[in-house]
Every structure is written in C-alpha cells, then in structure tokens.
Image (cartoon, rainbow, N blue to C red; front, side, top):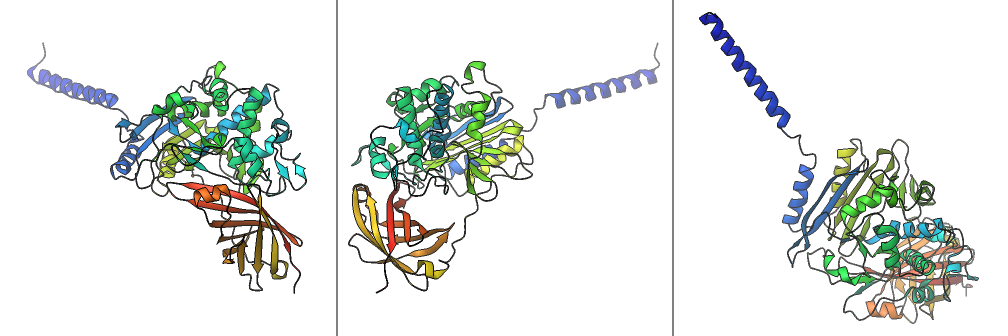
Length: 505
C-alpha cells in the first residue's frame, strides 16, 4: 500500500503527465500558419478600397495546385463573385495558346514553322519592298522578328465598326516595316495571322480548334475563345481604371488576345509546359521536343537576358533559374502568368481591372516566394536611352516621300535642322514639331501630330503619331504609328513610310 506522501506524489506526476500530453495533442492539432493570409488580406483591402474589382489566383507546385482562390466580383452589377473557376479575359496570355495550337499542327505534319507564312495564306500576302515575303516564316511571326508592325484595335459591341477579317488586315497592314530578323517588334498582327493559319490548316474556326485540341484535352473546362457566344455570361466583366464597367469588345487580331480562361485552368496549361507532372497522359498534347521548341529563346528583346521564344517571354540571367512568362494587359485586363521550370512552379494572377501601379506584380512575387524563397521577381527590360541624331550630318536636311495608309498614299515631309530638332508633316497638314526626337536602338524615334485620314484613324479620331524610321544611306523607311492609349480605349495603327533625302537648294 502506498504511503500518503507517495500517493500525493503520484497524483502530481499524473497531473503533470496529463497536462503535457494535452499540450502536445493541442500543438499537433494546431494548423500551420497560412502562407497566403497576408496576400489574401491585401487583395481584399484593394477591392474594398475600390482600386480593384475582381481577382483570381492559382499557384502550382510539382504538379499540384497548392492554392487557388477568387476575390471580389466577376460582375459587380450582377453580384456575381469571382472564383478560381471564373473565366477572365487574359489578353496577351492568349499568345502561348496560339503558338501551342500552331505546334500541334506542326507535330502532326500539317505545317512547317520554318516555311513562309505566305505559303499558308490566301490571296492577300505579307509583303516587303520586293513583293510577297519569303523570309517571313511562321517561326519569325511567332517570335516577333518578322518585321510585321505593332498593331492594336478594339471593336466595342454596338460600336460604329465591326471586327475585320485577317485577310483585310493583311491587305491594309501586312507590310514589313523592317527587314526580317533585323529587330524585335512586338506584333499582335503576327499572332492574328498565325491563328488564321491554324484555322486554314485545320479547316476549323480557330476557337473551335483551340477548344478541341488544347483546352479540352487539358481539362480546361472553364476556358473558351470569345467566339463561343453560348458562354458569354460566364465571362468576367472588364472595368476601366475608374471602376466603370466597359462594354464587351473584340480586338482586330483574335489570336493575339481573345482567350477567356480561369486561374484554375491556366494552372493546368502551366503543368503541360512544365513537363506534364500532375497531368494524365491524354493531356500531353505535345512531346518534350516540341515544348522545348516553343520555349527556346529566339529573339533578343533587350540586353541582359530578355528573349522571346514562340509565344513565350523568356528570362535567362546568370545566377537565377530560367523563367517562362507572358502577362496580359489591355483595357480592363491585367494578368500575370509565370513558370519556373527548374522548380516545378507556376503562378497565375488575373484581374478584370488594371489596378494600382505594380500591385498585381507584387501579388505574383509574394505568391512565388511561398514556393521559391529566394525568388527575385521579374525585372522590366531596360529602356534603351534616347540618343541624339549623331552624326548630325547624316540626318540633317529635308526628307520627303510617302506613307501607305490603307491603300492610299500620302505625302510625308520630315525636316531636321543642324541642332537635331525636327518637324513632321503628313498629307496636306502643316509641319508639326517632334518631341522626344532622337535615336532609340538606332531607330529614329519621336512624337508628333498629324491627320493621316485613313478609315481607321478617322473612325478613332487619332492624331497622335509616333515615328519609327531607320536610316539607310540617303533613305529612311519604317513606320509611323497613329495611336491612343487610355484605360477605356487603345488603338495603334502602323503605316509604312519611305523617305528620300532631298537635294539642298
């Protein structure tokens, strides 16, 4: 029999043991800290403050979606919330889908990416100074090195104009503004042409082919091309910077930016391009060799490791892992789509409003740091400096020639004085001063005004002009772009210009 003292001691030990056991059990049941709590809180705060409307995110790690969530409103007026399965307009994040669709046809032997794009077009051809171009291959179009110009146009529902066909755009704008391979020139027109070629070679409307051969095999059930009118009510409404709902609009080049996709579905597309981990064999619509061909850096965007593959932006810098990415941004759209193949990680952030400066990028980087602690972010390509027109004697003088604007030729005069100041006149307009005049990457650049008088510039009431001309001895050629960019409307119409130095009087 225990003594009274021993019994008391045993009781104390039992109490201590039970307390320790309970504490241990409680600790085991306490969930770990939520690594996304602060990100979630900040997104919700931006929406509450009226700076964002709807946001959806997803994070992939080694073949699993480890976080996906929606915030705010897909349609604020209808009180339809945004979720991880909401179909957002992804704008230029469409481009990797267009080139993926193109590559499925290449893998099936139905086209050759190193043959001229003109081989796969109809009567309207891409032309250079000598006529239809043989050097502008599908690969060149896909890597923005074909010499096709920058281009963008919006067609709001119920507006004065309807979306043109690609043949019409090739006729009006399919003039190379630089020799093939001379420089990087981001071209929505090129991507629009590639989508048209996919449609021609597959004998299907592009959106239908994309659905049948890319979206459906990947299980991307929330995603669709905007030509699928039956799913219009599923789209996230786009909002201007002031929070006003924008009318639904199409763009001139669907293959460059008219996919609607959810964050969840983009995570599945990322898994394909990360090598297939997490996907069934039936979802592997391209083998490793064809995926690598899409990802391979082809065109130098800027010094310092910035490249463009086939529909992919590529960052290769010493001391850091390679990054594949392609964001999307236009009126009412801001998206980030980033893959880090060596880590098996992908990040998606979608918004139906552009939001405050760098906020969406900040969400992207914070999400990536939960999976890659030493993630350094994605730097912006360095802006090349504006340099004086040197040597001055090569540029000074009067340059005269013509602009080709939707089938009409207009006189153009560029005058440059010995102080490298210039004026520009288009058509019958009076000479206008050129601001920010100089050389950017060897291209004569500047901002001016003038009335081009083409159907597109008249409809959009454009008079802002940007120069992009290259000196070639006693000639200059390139483009003058009529443009506008606001949170509600964007337009960029490029016109071929050819000038010759005029003799001194």
